[in-house]
Structures are given as C-alpha cells and as structure tokens.
Amino acid sequence: MGAEVDFHSGINQGVAPVTYGQGDRPPRGDYATARADYTCEQNWGAYTAADHELYRRLYERQAAQLPGLACDEFIAAVGELGAPAQIPRFDALSEKLMRATRWEIVAVPGLIPEEAFFALLAQRRFPVTGWIRKPEEFDYVVEPDVFHDLFGHVPLLFNPMFADYMQAYGAGGLKASRLEACEYLARLYWYTVEFGLINTPAGLRAYGAGILSSAGELRHSVQSPQPQRLGFDLERIMRTRYTIDSYQASYFVIDSFQQLFEATAPDFTPIYRRVANAGELAADSRLSTDRVF
Ligand SMILES: [Fe+2]
Image (cartoon, rainbow, N blue to C red; front, side, top):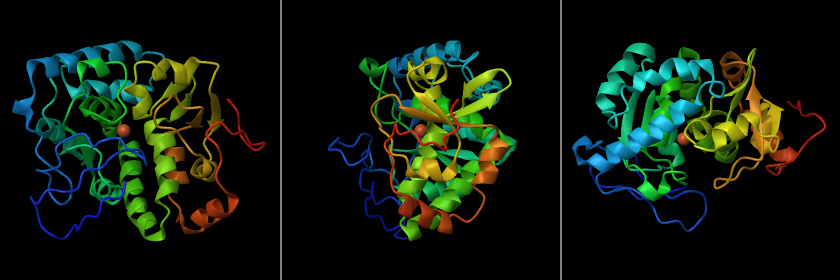
C-alpha cells in the first residue's frame, strides 16, 4: 500500500485506489467518490436483494460455527450487528457502538493506505468496506468485503478493552509511519486483530476477524493439528512474515485482551530497533524460545 495522498487537500476529489500487498491485483471498489481521508457514503440503497441474501447466507454459516470456536466476548457481541436478513446500515450500527465504547464505523471504498487507516483508528473510527463479494466468492475472498469487516471486526469493538487496543494501535501506527516501521505493525495487526487466538479455561478460541469471518479457517485455526500455535510475543510477531492467500502456518495466542493491551502500551521505538537487528522469520518458523500450545 502506498498511494500518495494529501490529507489536507479537502474533500470529494477522489483518491487513488489501493490494492493488496505488492501483487498485481486490480483494485476493487469505487474510489472516485471517496473523501481525502478515504471515507465515503455507504450508499445502502444500492445493495440489491441478491447482495442482502448473500450477506444473510454468509452470516448464518459463520454464526452456526461460533460455539466452541469463537471467544465468549465475540459471541456476546455479535448480536449487536442486528438481524442478518439485510446488510446493516452503518449509521444505525455506529449509534449503538458510540453508546457502548465511543467508536463509530465509517464506509470506505475498499483497502486504504496504512496512514489513512491508522488515522481513522486513532480517531475511534473503524473503516468498513462498502462492497460485498460475488456469489462465486462465497467460500473465499482475498480482499476484505463488507461481510468480513462487519462480522469479523465490529463485534469486538463493543468490548471496552479491545476497543482501546484498536485506538492505541492506530496512534502507534501514525508514529510507526514516521519511523518507517509500518511492516512491523502490520504483522502485529495481522497476528492479533486478524488472526489472533486467545487461551481460555475452556480451551483455545478465536478472536481474529480474518478467522471469524472465514468459513474454513475458524475450525482450522482452533482445532487442526496442522498449524503451530505459539504464545503471544510482541517482538517475535513483529519479525514473522505472513501470507495473505492461504491459511496461516502460525497463530499467536494471547492469555487475555488485558495482556494484549499492556504488551503494546510501551513506546515501540527501541523495540523496532531490536526487531530490525534480529531479522525476519518465515511464517512457519519455530524458535527455541517459543511457547508452544
Ligand atoms: Fe480485517
């Protein structure tokens, strides 16, 4: 990601589209109507009956899988999304979220540059993609769509501790941009917010949005003998590469959202230096210092 954007240039000029990773994938979403901060209108009236029906099928498939695989905090809050018969209206959902944790959700055309993303999180505004996948992408979609963003991310924003972590992450991201350490923070986001597991008295559970919105990876991440599950270790995570188009080879396990919040509270500046010196690790690497689940 790295579209050049002047964030002070006003609104409604349209912004450069953003694509995933360094690949040649064409951008998805309509960036022509986005404001300079990359937010746009949800345009709820433009969803078709087929769009709503696809959302309902996605929601119901995932909801059925949650018991025993998703963390309690997620299960407790997923109902806040409302009835799955229709794609939720972002403004109505924002009102509920504002009352619960002072967060709101804002529509974006699709992927947005890191700095724009960090800036929104720091303002307790969560960007949600407007478009929904195509029916043939029912089982898998590479780029995050409205289902991933809403179902995967929004329920935990109702959790006060997690909500504070997300804001702190955004603020840290703005600082990392200046230190050219965005890659490290991207890995932290990936292995926590997107693909994190949490250790509970009942066993491992998922809290990462990439897992919770995935038909296959939810069970895979929690129960398959294939991937490795390692204890949360901030610097270890920052060193670990990841892949965007397959199930993860490694998942990192937190003990609590409190642990996550506290581990990421210190100033990362000296941490970035140590991580740079320690070098990158492959996604499936194993260190003698890893705590293995
Ligand atoms: Fe996501």
